[in-house]
Length: 128
Image (cartoon, rainbow, N blue to C red; front, side, top):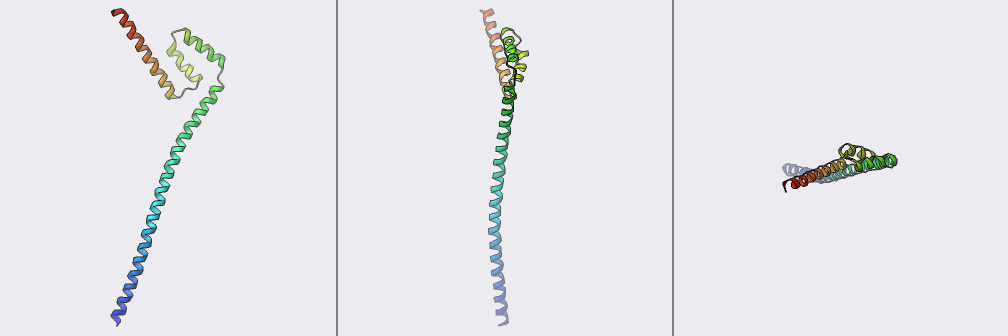
């Protein structure tokens, strides 16, 4: 009887332990889900922050552009169109109009391609 009582007590203890383990596993699964949700939320916030910072930079450039002296810009553009000082004037125009670094690289690349095209046409004229 004593051993049956002891076995019953151990079985009850094991059942309680199994129930606690089950609850802890469920809690662990829930905490893992919450953690993963938090990680996704942080990632989304970081992406939004990056987009918003770029938008702020764009707005700041736009605001500076609005304050540019149009008479000065007009004179620089006249000089750009009437002389061959394009390479020297491009940075000035970029500063006045607040070009981003990407925009400035794009303009310089297009300018380089235009110059290569001109030299190609000149070479064709002399070889024909």
